[in-house]
Structure formats: structure tokens, C-alpha cells
Amino acid sequence: MLSTLLNAYNAMNPAPAAQAHCDGPCGVYDPASARIAAEAAVSMTKKLLALEVPDGSDKAAVVKYHNSFSRYVAIKEEQAHIAKEELLVLWTDYFKPHHLEAYPELHDIFWKAAKECSYVKVECSMHHAEALMGHIEKIHTIFWATKNRDVAYYTT
Image 1 (cartoon, rainbow, N blue to C red):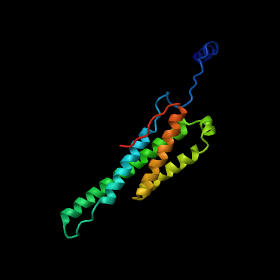
Image 2: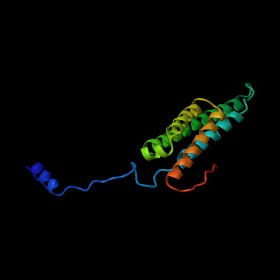
Image 3: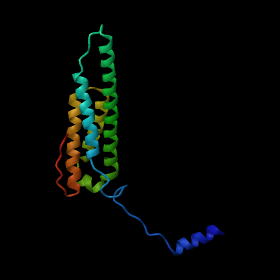
Image 4: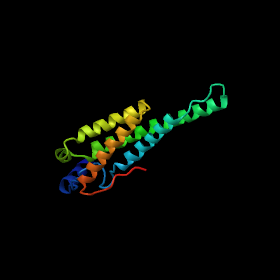
């Protein structure tokens, strides 16, 4: 009985249809979060490559080395994963078919950026870290162009 009444009421007073061009309210998306995470991964890559392997007979130095090494790797992995998540959300939630029409290279840039995130996690390579930053810069430029804004790209 109650169900019948509610259905009748809803039929007479339908709720207005809500529409949005993306999954979240405008202004939520920004490639800066991916850039910041990628920069942290770049920083950890630099630190890893700069670590000097100590003399094996100096136990304290070896322990310190392994501690620093493992912490840098953990941070690099975590931040590269965060960058990937941020990029994938931007790619799948913000960008729409009309953006792809205006920027046909968009899918390729995002795909390459996501792959670079994986390479940054798997390897300790400045080549991949810098390639990731290059893709994020392209995404930044396209993203802000879709909003008709000229926002400078910078790194810290």
C-alpha cells in the first residue's frame, strides 16, 4: 500500500533530472596533483641514483644505506602509483568526447603517461621519470586549454 502511494506521488511530482559534464562538481579536477606526485617520484629516483654503496665491513653504514634505500623506493613506488591514479581519474572522469575531437592525441598521451608511471615504479631511471613529467606537462597544457585558461606549468 505504501509503495503504491509513493509511486503515485513520484509519478505526479517527478524529481528534476540532474545533469553534469563530469563525475564531480566543476573545479575538482586539476593535473597538478599528478604533477606533485610525479615530482616526488622523480626526487626519490634522484636520491636513489645518488646513494653511495658503503663498504660492506661498516655495519652501521650498510644499515643506514639499506634504510635510506628502502625508504626512497617505498616513497617512489607510492608516489608513482598516486600519480597514475590521479591521471586515470582525470582521463576517465574529466575528459569527454568533444575534448578528444579537439585533441586527438589525448588518449595516446594519457596511455603513455600511465605506462611511464609503471616504468617509474619498476625501474630506477631518470629517463622514465623525466618522460613522465613531459607527458604530465602536455596533459596540463591540454587540460587548461579545455577551460580556456592559460595556466603556467611549473615544477618545484
